[in-house]
Image (cartoon, rainbow, N blue to C red; front, side):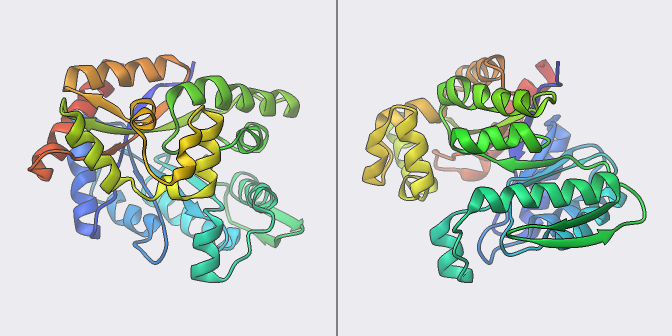
Length: 316
């Protein structure tokens, strides 16, 4: 059985603050730190290069690095640096991101996001794992070699069943985002297994994103989710995922109470810890936790959340 893990999404407004969260998480016993590269914000792989020399054991993961703005050979250049600075600690998560974002910011069309992701995975896994690639596809051309193969799992984002099947067939793991646990159990995991079975390979792990809010105040939780996770119901990919999970009201572009109850792990610390363990028991390999801070003291809320993550991590 794969090792079960707890990871913290360690994003913060500044690189120093993000590094501080990683150091706190490692001290608490959390297994992994995850970062997202989005828009014109801070680059996750660059921050991890700094974290590699400021931490000892904590794993790193990108969730995600968007494919369209960065050629896979450029991604391989960055990955080699991390592989040398922090051997066996990086998991590279990739994804096409979202059509509105890519179109508005970069002018990319995203006419075939799954084809783009499929080719990106093929190129990057060949170059990193075999040391060479010769590829001419619809989206990319890549001919390159590196001095030595690199032991870095190449994972991909997934929301719909088709993307989970793709991950099962080609990736070293699938990474969900703000998806209800029952949707992951009933839709994502079977699709992941179908993809791997059709490809004749072992089923890769599922890293399940879990927003966590340690609060027994439903009103405070609702407000925090609406403020801190407001963008997701506005995006068509997420609306379709929630509709498939049984929450068509996501089309209204806001969080319903039912969506919050299904997606956000909330309650007092003991209750949240039990929900995290139960989610792993459904078949997820790792929880990627984004803290949702509902109290009047965000720093204290973050510290309390990291402490809980460390406790659950050490109990596995």
